[in-house]
Length: 142
Image (cartoon, rainbow, N blue to C red; front, side, top):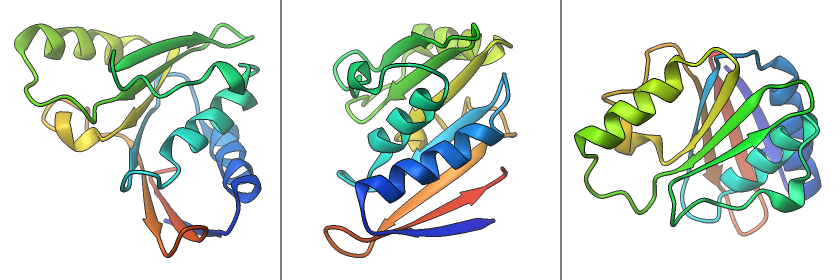
C-alpha cells in the first residue's frame, strides 16, 4: 500500500500522474471516497497523463459512463455509479464486456455499486477527507 497526503488540487493532480505512470492496459481502478473527495480530479490527472484534455473530463453522473481515447490508442472508460440504484442484467453484461477489453483502463467512481462483477485484480484507491483541503489517498494493488 502507498499512502499520500494532499493539501491542494495541485498535489492531488501529481498523485494522479504518479498513479497513471504505473497503469497498464487492462487495469481497473476503483476510486472510493465521499462526495467531493477528489475522485474526478484524480481521473482528470490520470487522463491528462495519457494526453487527454483534462477540461473535457466530466463526471458521467447522468450517463454512468464516458469513453476517452488517449494519444496511444488506450481507451479510458470513466464510470460514475453514484446514481445507480439497481444494476440490471443488461448493464452487468455491458460492463463485463468493457472489463474484458484489453486496450482499456477503467476508472470507477462508487465501485461498491458493482463489486459483485468487478474482477478480483484491481487497483483500489481510498480517499479520506481530513478537512475541506486535506486528504489521505491510499493506493492498494499498484
